[in-house]
Image 1 (spheres, rainbow, N blue to C red):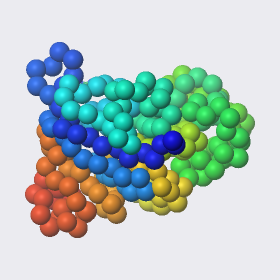
Image 2 (image 1 turned 45 degrees about the horizontal axis):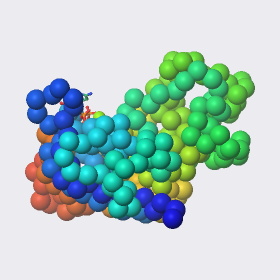
Image 3 (image 1 turned 120 degrees about the horizontal axis):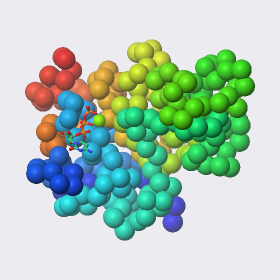
Length: 242
Ligand code: CTP
Ligand code: MG
């Protein structure tokens, strides 16, 4: 059966190999298809560690991460990757062209698919202004494009793959506020019934999320909508005010 993309954490505890204490402690939540789940928390709180468990970059010591009720530990990384699209906090481009970087997740994508993904990722103008457009060269690590352009190309790459679960780890931080807003609006139109999980430094990026999880020192200390959390969660209020 085709994947729906329901993501579930059940009592997940995780520590990096060799570390004394876990960075995530008994984390449980559900991220539903068609909805946006945002994860906020101060630096070092464990946000990246948390979402990296979904595509199995690491496996938890206790508890389980499930997609559509199936433990990801029973799937290969390739199987998980066909369902989950991760835009990592340090987006990576490899040596090739803009097109080859965008097609990485789906070799069969047409040029029209790539332009559509670039439109949503707010990268269309910048690629159109390149001498060779989609065939413009990218150097190893993407050192010949700016941080914000690199982020947009990696967002576009995730969109080209059309996963059931989108994971954006602080992916909008290098964008100015108005580009960020345009991108998220366009994103909302194309992600449709997929599951979207967004880690955000800038709370203004996620005030309209269906569910916000507040992570503090590896523990979920609050969950709710923006309005609910402003009302009753001190950690969230501090993040909003910072
Ligand atoms: N950590 C670690 N080994 C790693 C990565 C992270 O020991 N390979 C530790 C960090 O030092 C930190 C904790 O795990 O104490 C959580 O890190 P991370 O999940 O990366 O925190 P974030 O909430 O993502 O922080 P930021 O907002 O700065 O991205
Ligand atoms: Mg992080």
